[in-house]
Structure formats: structure tokens, C-alpha cells
Length: 360
Image (tube, rainbow, N blue to C red; front, top):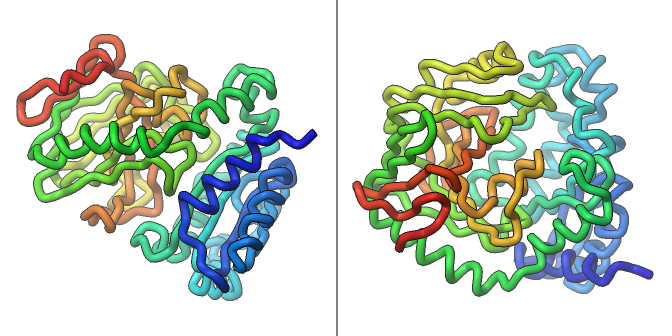
């Protein structure tokens, strides 16, 4: 029997995350492993009198096949196909469904090639970052994601739907109260084990993610003032993952908004090379505050982990122009810090969260 949760999931993506009008062209990307959800998305787009433009990934990763990414000349990697550019320029919306065959498939791809692919995709994702292309991204339960989380596929299904199928209007109202308090502040201070870092939000406003660009929702986020980060943060609780590689116990020290010292217990060379991707890679593009009550444990899955209630995440690289961010980079790398044991958040000197619990 079809899982009725799939239909509800698709409804959130098509009806709530996006505004699809008759005649709209909606890019729908995913892998064969996500077929039940992709089919339901297509049905619901049809009911909107719009076009689903289905784009399948062989291995569940980016739409550029790994074999092409490995073999193509370097200069070709940084140049998107003209027909792809045209499609992204003309599309009205994007729904990206992640269901990988193996989450580490891309880890063997040389870092130089990964950087060139990211540079080539930068013009394509520009509309997403500017807010001129509606988009939403999500995941579909599959064995690879379940294995990463240390769960059976059935357990992961229940966990995913428990984090997605919430009363999002009530969640939005709750998160907006916290976000409004941040909007009224000039400085955020984050304190924890081996962590004391200050960021400025002066002149910036946050955005609540109840349902929208990322599903599941459950955060509010800002693009901090680009030259404001001062201090040290240690991500000792969870690994940071980028390019199919895990970096454990990342430590970053900021001066004048830039990372001036960086280390990790594993894959440190990869960390340092990633920070040198471009000039913007050493600055922050995002401060996010996790608030999803259905996500209580680490999943080795950033889409979920950054929403854990009682965590914050910092993103190195590209900021969000639609909320005032000006930092530009080909990367946007979210790294999660757990504040539930011994951590706190201060706004202009007032403690607003301690040990993961709100005091306001």
C-alpha cells in the first residue's frame, strides 16, 4: 500500500513551500530511489496546471554524473552547458529531492574538480540566493541516509516524517518570537566549551524557516555583518561534512570577520584547502538557530542536524542577499555546534538561551 505520508510530504513541498501558478515551469530533481515522492510531486504540479521538468541523477548526487565530473577537462567543469543555463534562467521554481545511493560517492573526486564544479554552478544558483527563483530542498528515506543515521530504513522513515509533518503554523509563530528578539539586537555572543565568539547583526534581519527553502524546517537564520566575527568556536560535538569528507573537532578563530586559524582532528588538509576556495570562503554567510522539536539527535545529515533544537550553525561562504548578506563564495558550508550542555547565547549581553533552553 502507498504510504499516505508521501502525499502529505508532497503537499508541503508543492502547496506550502512554493507558490506555483498555471503555466509555471518547475524543475524537479532527484534519483530513482525517490520515485514515490517524485511521482506524487508531479501529480500535484499537474493539479496546479504547471509543468514538472523531471531531472534524474544516476547516483542521487548532483545532476552532473560522477563519471563526467571525473573525466571531463578541467576547463569544461567550470562552464555549465548552455541548455542548462537557459533552463535555470527560465524556470519558475525548483524542488530538489536528495536520495543518494551512497553519501560518499563524491569523496574520491579531486578537490580541484569539486571547486571548479562549484564555481560553474555559481551563476545557476544565483537566482536561488537572490530570491528570484523559488526553491525547496528535501530528502527521501533511503538506505544510505538511514545507514548514516545509524537506523534501519523504516526507523529513518519514521524519524524523517516526524520532523517534517508538524503543525508548521504553530512552529512559525514560536520561532518568530525568538527571531524578533534577535532582530532587535546588535550583537550575538555564543559561548560554550572552548568557544567564545561575537557576531554583529546590526542592520540585519532574520528569516524564519517553518516550511520553505529547506524541508524539514525548524530554524531561523541571519547573514551576520561580514567583518564582525571575532573569537573562537570549536565544533567538538559533531563532525563537519563537506565534499563527501568528514572533519572532526573543527576549531576556527576569527579576526575582523575572517578565519585566521583553523584546525581539525581529521582531514585537516581538506579543511584548509576548502577555506582557500576563494576570498569569501573564510567569512561567514549565515548564523542559524536550530528549533525543530522533532530532531533531538545527531544524524550525520546536515539538513536535519542544523535544525536540532538547542544548536546553532555557522555557514562559511556565501551569504543570503535577500536578508542583507553581501559575502560571495562558491561554497556555503553549514557546521553545527551543540549548546545543550554548557552553552549559551547572549544578545547585547542578555542571556537568551542556556543549555539549549530559551530564557525569553
